[in-house]
Length: 217
Image (cartoon, rainbow, N blue to C red):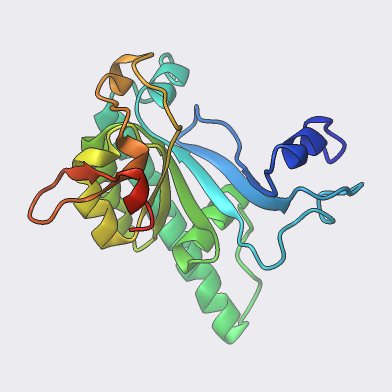
């Protein structure tokens, strides 16, 4: 993150006061995100939102399948296998460190920065953000999160969030969406213009677009 980026004063002039900066969308696990206030500073530390937790950027769907087309998962099933394998390692890593921190017996476990980030997500200290378009994939990732005990904070882009609005509401998961964009690739074909202004419909898995007078609901 470059604090002197000339885009920041333009953002502030346009009314944007707070941003979350996330790395990549091509990896199953992209790295940590940071929440910043758009204020002049020579350092990232001077822009950090007080008390805001770091995030973990993850991605599903066509992006990681394309990035790993010659060296890793090439299917959505392969993506999920990759998440689960990584969380299994992170769970074991967290247990080793939790045990050592509790009794301080012997040398500490060897640090692994990849697993350290995932372990902090399992502890709830880092919030998980998922780049994900399709409703069925979002539902699958919710299942994975429950298997390992971490919380998905938000699905990003979330073109088909309107199909599972009731599920997202029940789980307390946000959908971070564009105002109007879709159809540029296969997993975006079911986007609808009303998706950013939907609320769960009682007794249904779909949602009702909110009219301007009703947006506070």
